[in-house]
Length: 240
Image 1 (cartoon, rainbow, N blue to C red):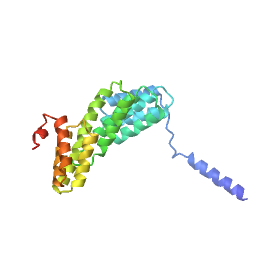
Image 2 (image 1 turned 45 degrees about the vertical axis):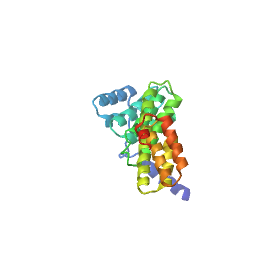
Image 3 (image 1 turned 30 degrees about the vertical axis):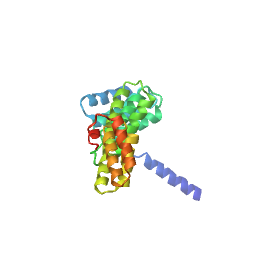
Image 4 (image 1 turned 90 degrees about the vertical axis):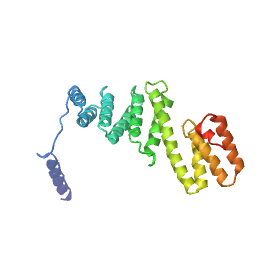
């Protein structure tokens, strides 16, 4: 009796699942979906284009066009300033198509998603660190990619940005006479951001910090380093 009751309940549930309220999404031909999405992209309707490109990829994941549909979905999200959506689409691409010819471009697009969210120098530079990591990985893995040169330029900009953020905090430490914190920050600029425009100032500020805490030999060491590496720099000319 109990078994018969369960069978009746199961039949009722299945009947309810196939009722008139159930919506079945018909699969559309890939060529139609892609053409529609591309037309929307051309009309600057990036939000709907992203939806339709993803639909094309979801309905035809084994098609040779599926990777391209994902790339276009990511780019549509990017053009719509929907960086989170773009990153999700690129994540999916990298997971299912790690050896595709468009991997360098997708890595570049990921970097640009973070790069365009880099905030004011006085704020937390989390996005700049993510962007730097993406561009550096691209350059390391695909140094001959057509996107590598642009990524290298972005790396220089980002290193200057990050160094500028550290310098901003170091100057605040110096104003509060928090010398240990200022020294740690300044030394990180000298060590990790040698290509940045902030390096000379960091060396000069280190001479000030060590002078302030009564360590003239360390101050003299950074002064000499500044003279050797930046003989004509404005910060070198400030040395006494």
